[in-house]
Amino acid sequence: MKRALFLSIVSSVAVAAAWVQITSAQVPQTGANDISGERIRAHVKFLASDLLEGRGVGTRGGDLASEYIATEFALDGLKPAGDQGTYFQNFTLVGADPQPATSLSVTAGRVTLPFRWLDDFVGVTFQQKPNVEIDADAVFVGHGIVAPEYQWDDYQGLDVHGKVVVLFTGEPPSHDPKFFKGEALTYYGRWTYKFEEAARHGAIGAIIIHTTPTASYGWNVVRSSWSKEEVEMKLAPGAAAVGFAGWVTKEAGERIAATQNTTADQWLTLADMRGFRAQPLPLRFRIRASAKIREIRTRNVIGKVEGSDPQLKNQAVMFSAHWDHLGVGEAIRGDAIYNGAQDNATGCGVLLELARAWAALPQKPRRSALFISVTAEEAGLLGSEYYGQHPVIPAGKTALALNYDSLPPLGRTSDVQVHGAERTTIYPVVEEAARRFHLTISPDPRPLAGTYYRSDHFSFARVGIPAFSIDAGHELLGRPPGTGNHLADEYNEAHYHQPSDEYHDDWDFSGMELYARFGFLINREAANLPNLPTWHAGDEFLAARVASGVRE
Image 1: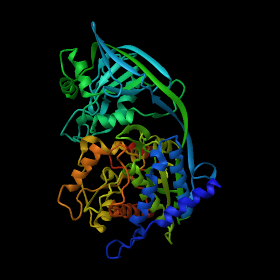
Image 2: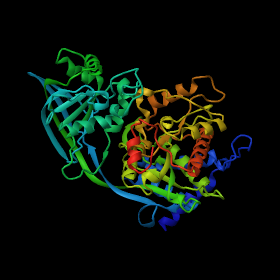
Image 3: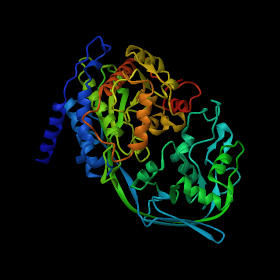
């Protein structure tokens, strides 16, 4: 009876979506003209509702979201591509929910500085234990980067085993495209890399001094993200992990630096200098990491539309979007549900509409198409990472992966963002699709944020698949120049990872419809290409592509 009721709800939501007809003069005749922004709206409204309680991983709301997506796949005629004839790819994660009993203090000589949970610091153990006690010396390691290709090693000549490393996010600034790719942030600048590298060097703890420029977001984002349950891949026996992965505010960092008669800004200046070497600090960190630990069964949702070519149907193109958000957390102005309407109910709505339109094609493209809604993106791209290691169709037989993540409901634009597409041999197809939709391809407006390494396409790229996200442009039609950038900044400052990221009936879905049609055309062309695309010579992902069996 429950299943029947749920199917009824799902069907009602889908049927209720209105059809917005776009004339053939407005869009290329590719089959994409069947895509409707109003159908996308219906999915977003449901997935962002309070009923789903923020779609947290391992929660009732998350299970409802993934069940809804699987049901829509079934209604649209997609074949199950998950485990044992289902739409679900199941796996186990570990949740570490940091507790207020977590404490951190720093001792310099006879002076001990206590710090307040949430106000001054946040963090969690990565060792997947309920209690971890740390009493260790500190080392300042700059940006915590080891990059032989750039002759950079922040750990050179110093053993940090059993110590707490203090560092910044980001990477050394440069205008030289041959040095850390110039202004564009690489994976070396991401917080995930910092903690991974600290563990590889045997550090017991890692403390990031937060600044808005180096992180590209404010402390409110760090606080809301790191005060909730941290979801991690289950550690293999004997695997290295830091006992405490934490952040301190800029103000707390200044208090720590002041014990050494310096400032956090001066430390950052040192970290940015070529030739920087890690420095032992006459400081003692005392940390108690308290967490509730649980195993979490979660799942990616995967549907497949089989290709028409007898041989090439064993290869595929992919569309993806993550279904998870932050669930229920700290109440802000009385609201504790982090609905994630833009992030990423929008991407899921686009994915579902793409799946429906692709499945409805009377003549299918030569290669198959996979539609993947991944879990645990907010925990560090874990669902897409799991898929990359356990693919339904091997990376060497996957032509292209297009991802949708956090599309603004602001209407149509004259431009589109496809950062990373230019690194692949599929780029001429992308340029032609943009031309056919009268779109310009705009540059990354925030290269220092490392956008390419912060969404699920990155997990697919790491195993060699040409992959990128289709992101909204910023030149809104009928609006003054710069309006889109202003509204994007407003969202990042006020609503990103906050309970206020909620659905509104006055949202304009015409832009999402446009980006869905654009991606549909690109992947349809990729699905019919005679040869598999790859990465350009010298790209960091080319080796993985070659290892997967695709020639340069």
